[in-house]
Length: 180
Image (cartoon, rainbow, N blue to C red; front, side, top):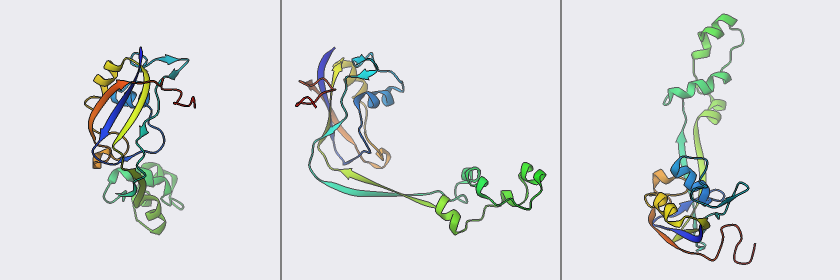
C-alpha cells in the first residue's frame, strides 16, 4: 500500500452534486460495496479523498427536461393510480382495477406531479479532477482506465474523460496539505 494520486483529465465540463470519493467511484465501477483490496481501509474509513476539481471559476447552468406524462410512459400509471379519485366506487371495482381507477386524465394538479420535470445542475469547466489515496495504485488505475465519463448526466456528454493519470502523492486521502 502506497500513497498516490489519480487524475481524470476531462474533455467536457463535469456535473457533480456533493463529493465524489475515490472509494465510491471504484465501488460503482466494480459494482461492489467493498474495495478494501484496492484502498487502505481502517475502521470502515477508506484512505481516499473526494474528487478535487482544478478550480477555474467557470460554471454554467445546465437544465434538463424529463417528460413523465403517463400517456407517453404507461408504466407511470402505477405511480399515478394512488392519486386517482376512487370515492363512490364500490370496493370490488377498486380491487379489480375497473372504473375510474384505470382512467388517467391529466389535470393541472397532476401535471405538477407527473408532467414535465425540470432538473437544474451546475456544470463546472475544469481540466481535471484529482483524488489522493493510500492503496494499490496500479490496481486502481486498471479499474478506472476504461471509465469514459464521471459525474452526473454522463449520457449527454458531461464529465467525459480524456485520459487517466497516476502519480505519487504526499497526501494520504484523509488529511489535506494543511492537515485539514
